[in-house]
View (cartoon, rainbow, N blue to C red):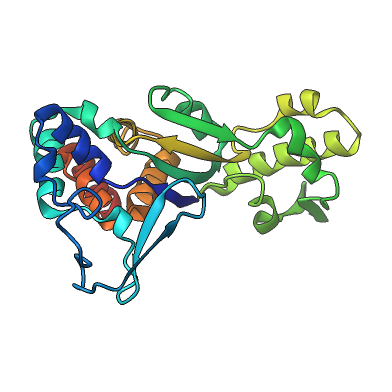
Length: 268
């Protein structure tokens, strides 16, 4: 599960480039070009300025087309990012950006995510404080009649999927839910979370907020959407790309390797 929470205005990136070239006077984004007085989307002059919801900066809203003018980026500024950041590969300018997601995935994926350190800031739901959520759960496994040498069993996949990432393989899912059942038993036996978490399966879910700059996000996507990567991580990368606003998605897919693997994943 991926939920996009925030993207900073792309003109922050183009303005960084223009600072280095001393061409800030050529910016054509609404917030940077003082000559733009009407809405660049619909031409209306009915614009309302106010403090943002955080009370820390001014925002502009077109009252006719409802466009948020603070995030508008002009065509020249956008093409400048494409040229300098992608064609000429001066990636440092892409660090003038912030992208924030909520994630839900397995601890196996979390281990791989934790290897991405530069430009990545994760804050993860703590198992130390939250494992008690299993305390009042009913059994995830029920046993039926004995048939020959075997006892029929039923695994509650839907309820278990609240806590663990399941696969397409029934045998693997059975082992995952067996492990989840043991964790639940430890909690119900009042074992401490610090002890119980040693028994957690790799499939146990984490939730959290993760922030990137555009350069660090491109690095992660390039590595983790590749065919050799963990399938769950590849699908997460696809969801990340699909959740991006169109201008951000276009920039990400300018990377040929990411674009190729993204298309192949869509066709699998």
